[in-house]
Length: 111
Image (cartoon, rainbow, N blue to C red; front, side, top):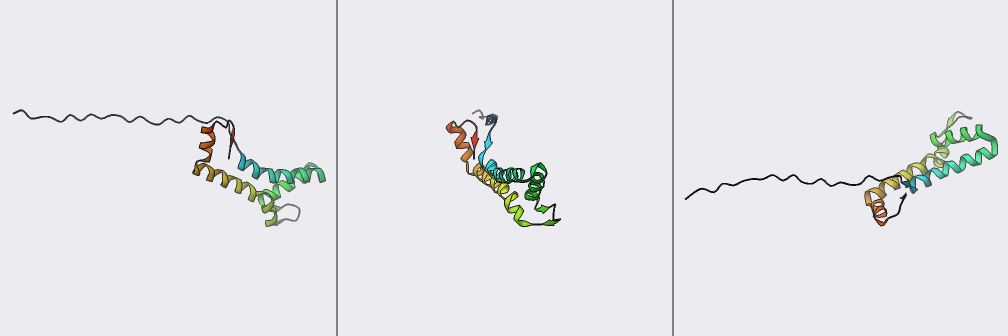
């Protein structure tokens, strides 16, 4: 009786290919950026470009250039909302909300 040989064939697995998204607007990050932008507009109306620039720097870093001190209230008005928006955007990505929006056919907007 002849021996039967086992022939092993290796099949290369097909890689999943995801199409790369085009231009999208993350709404949570834009909402976070709207807070310091609103303060900058208010400062510009009150004192021009110089006050708007100093106010924007103070709100994004917490350091007040006029008093030369660190003031946490400025962080609450500027950087904290931006960081919160980035956090919401990351969580929406991990939960799959942005993928659902793209599969539903929403063209540009993401959470």
